[in-house]
Image 1: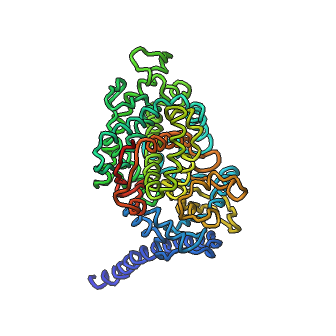
Image 2: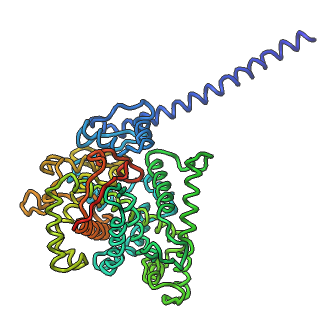
Length: 522
């Protein structure tokens, strides 16, 4: 009996063992086949890109390790710039399996953005939109089509040149505050101008959007007072998280018990605590149809927040908070860092500084101050800002588009799903477009000959998505530079290294914070 049972059971055991052995083999083979098929399909889909130059890459991860390392070192803009110099004006990098075509010819960038977004062949990439919207919620720059259109339509009038003219007094007050701060500094003492300009621009954008006082000592009855250092730290944290996510970090990583995650959630809480009382008050004024609430200041009553809340019912509390965070970030670093780089270049270019000062002095003698009317005579100062942006495009490498269908750029077929980005630092130094590209020559923006009249100025973007705050940035920058030229001489403490040792959080900034020694003019 025992022998009979063993003879019948053994084949069953062998069959079961064989089944258990075959299952993982079949699963592994199936998975391998699917992955191989996907790899082959993607390779065929992006075959047209193989003729483009590309930096050395990992067989699986592509150039993602280099990209993430550059983000960690805060040198992403430099990585794109170096690759552009090595590989030419159009090359491809691989973010894992996804190709990213990088452009560095100014006119090609401009035409690609305008034409691609006009005909719908290019839109903001999904990854980038997710990264923007993860900062605080759905925002204008993170949306497309109708969701973008109603937001843009609501804010456009607020940032037009005509609307901003009524804010000239606020901007002038903030600039004069910087001048008074510098006058109190001992002449031999170093001043880090980048934080000084950050305070200027943050106070201006916060006053315009939220109705907070520009004066450091004035109370803010509608909510917590603006603490520039704390606000800037919070904005830097969420901005750096955006850059990491745009470069490949997963959204869910913010939930991991890491220091980056803890900093991110603390920054979000701080921003919400500062903004929520003001946003809720603006919505109360809309709900009760009482734009003249007696308990609010005139500054708040006339703020963009109150006007937008009143005229755009699609905005509610969370979406308004998210949009204001976007505007505070966009309206602070951009102009502040540009002013720092302009101060640095003027220090190293005495001819340009003297020419600019002569113009400012003449305007001052004629009008007795720098105001909205006198700004019309300061085209050379505006040219200095444009030339600064050409050499130090603070937003270089922080945006991209995605092909919605096969399209053509410079004769190359760009397959559907390819991302398209650009190096603004490389574009600004294109010797075929800008004569003597390494020289600081504001005159190139004023010449009226046919070679220079159409110079591309793409640092504010192109087409309908052009930067909302362009007029504000130019107004603020021109007024601040003019006042500095009128009141001070200065020199860079660290010389040209302040303009060469750069880092990138969300935007490019001088890593040494641009220390300067000021001397008040007689």
